[in-house]
Image (cartoon, rainbow, N blue to C red; front, side, top):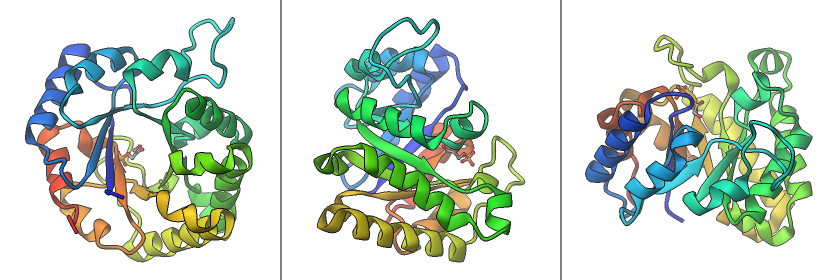
Length: 253
Ligand code: 13P
């Protein structure tokens, strides 16, 4: 499978900025050997889907409600977004730690997104406190297990995982450092072994991305780590040129 690199624009950019920057990325990105996605603010999903139409780039949902429809004022469902989307993130650390999404809710969202026909990128990662007490792997394992327990066996083919250690996510703060390549290698190897154990041969249909302070300066070194099949990029994806430099660091064979 191609590596996958996603720009997560979080709650940034007006509609004009989003359309302009998505068009610029589409113009500059070479998508022959990489799957490239853009996750805009949900309100611009339809506009960005239109901008990316025919470019080979994917439109990604940042998050949505776990129900397909109903009396949920202010909420939006994966079903409503599916006509304008190819993929969906679930369980992003900001959803878990700012909005309180539990492992159980994330699993329901993964099911809902897949039922709406979207490939799911399950975001996982431990907090600094969890890591310091030696719970990093068990937290990540529980986050993945709750989704694997919930989705159909054949739906693993519609799943990727993004390891985003909470302590390495910049949140726009350029002084935050990514995880070391040793730490990335250790957790990606753990995730790969767990996927192999849980889903058997289909594990190689699941890409494991890294996210957390990925920038043009460190992208090549991160992509060289074994078991890293792409990246989920926040701050450094806001500038189209910087995001395209990250894409250019992906090894193409
Ligand atoms: P940064 O790249 O800004 O650390 O954000 C990572 C992230 O949360 C992407 O989803």
